[in-house]
Length: 438
Image 1 (cartoon, one colour):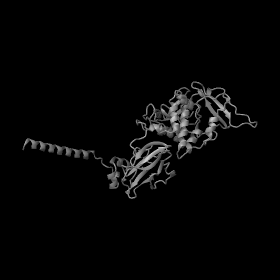
Image 2 (cartoon, helix red, strand yellow; image 1 turned 135 degrees about the horizontal axis):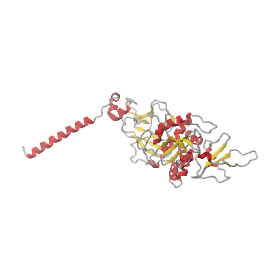
Image 3 (tube, rainbow, N blue to C red; image 1 turned 90 degrees about the vertical axis):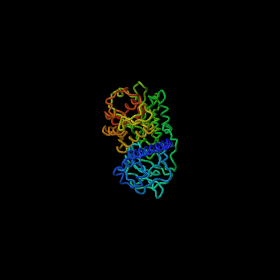
Image 4 (tube, helix red, strand yellow; image 1 turned 180 degrees about the vertical axis):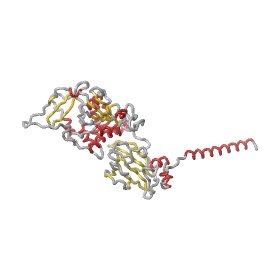
């Protein structure tokens, strides 16, 4: 055998060795299916990733009529005109939506159930089928809630909403757009106004007011429920950014907000209460009668004698929801260590829906003007949603004096009455809900 032939034979043997090693590695890397996954129809097993099958076989059994679509589809996602990343539907016969990490698409909205819904492609009829998997707050198709656990065929252009989330998912043909929108630009005009406003030199004093305005703007855009706006109006009013001039009718802003569907905070005698103050000064409490007397006298203001009550320590709890733009976007709560990717607008939505959910369960007390919370109820919400280290103490900040925290926190906290939870307050840490329990 010539040296050339010997070299060729050597290369052939080397190629065979490499091929055998590759086959061995492929067998070593193959993922064994769980017993539940092995019981699925063979064509579902063949068309689905084994990791997905093992995670989901115990929580959802894909029907035999499912199959891979012959072309690409995606869910086009918008909220109030703002564009969000599309969700691809071309890889598997079915997709799960919910809060659980086992789902294909994890939805963070507080009204979403652990395993909320499924989209399944019907191979025979070449259409997707929507299935509410017994969720608490339901699935809406074209604005109407679908019957739980009943498969509903959907067509291109169908609009889907999960729970009370304001995001709408429209079924479209084709692969998802390659260029994904930036979440930083997904917020509505009100939220963008708040962000630019909070970046100004005077943002510390106006942070809570900006948060309340951004919430109202986001809620008015679209959405299946209007309860969150009512919760904001009844739970607490936003701090005034500029002190009222003497003799001026400072209740006008509250009156304007009342026209949107909820009365301003009022005491048992029908007086509107507005709080004003500058940083470093005790805010004055101005009380305006809501009705004129028989002689048609104009509204008059009487200022409280002193601000001593505002300097009395209060027992304060907090719940903080982070977003991707905070100083440290890493969760220290229930999902400890995870990178936070939600937008500021999403964090505001979550806080607002926590308030709305409580108001749906606890009736408004007319004498108070809000739905009172118990310490147990607020601590339970902290355990589920809080993403800062205060969760270890169940959100308990202890007895707090005015000036301990940032101005935004002070303004909101020292206006609360016992049993009241504030409207969402924005700081560099995230979106806060404050609860006074002393």
